[in-house]
Image 1 (cartoon, rainbow, N blue to C red):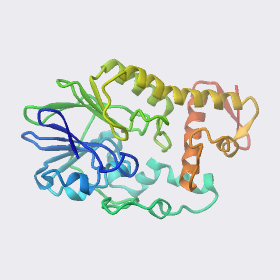
Image 2: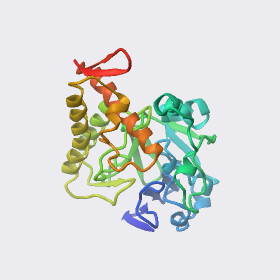
Image 3: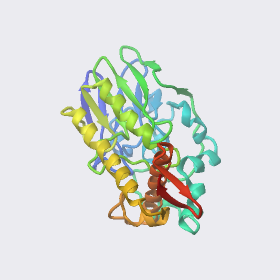
Length: 303
């Protein structure tokens, strides 16, 4: 479904709720017809003139944002400079997600993601590494002129190292991607996620004060945006404080994961892995703040 936000600017919404493996995307009709992100699903994109799209801007390298690339055969893919190698190198792909840490964290070999979590038929690709030829990169503050409409790439790291939003400043519309304002709070479970960066990115959006936010996994937001951002990042801060309190007693990563601070209703091995990766990112942040230190044997304790 297409939702009009302004003249020649639409949100492309999935047929179902925009939850994994789907996400909201955007379509801009201009001299350079453009889509932002590619995860709405083949049925949702059927409303677009896909073969006429010339440019696809990707917010970051996560499967639910890239799986529709085959629908746009004539588009040039542009991505954040920080994640450019992830699209061409399997080694970078594994490092980006942290899958090289699976065996030490999980104690066994990794099952294919598509086997653990089945995908619907209008998701045309499958998780896993596949090379995606790029037509260029952007960095923070780059202005991309599409004709009458222009947008600015806004680096919003924390979810991943090269996570970007796109700001249509004249219209006051920010595509915030996976700073998505969902009630469960942010997802920061990859190897390139960073708690401190995520906090700063939310502050950056507050300073921008967009009129409308288009998040990847929630409906369009236009009310109480600053308050929503505060509530969103408060979930991260509360988890951080809880881990700090738990470390009055030395604990290892496995012990902390059993408190289910991130995925309280854990359903599969991947959610356990992401729980451990999220806590690992909190421990890194707390260590950088000199609030926690590592002991021999993989134990952590308050400083």
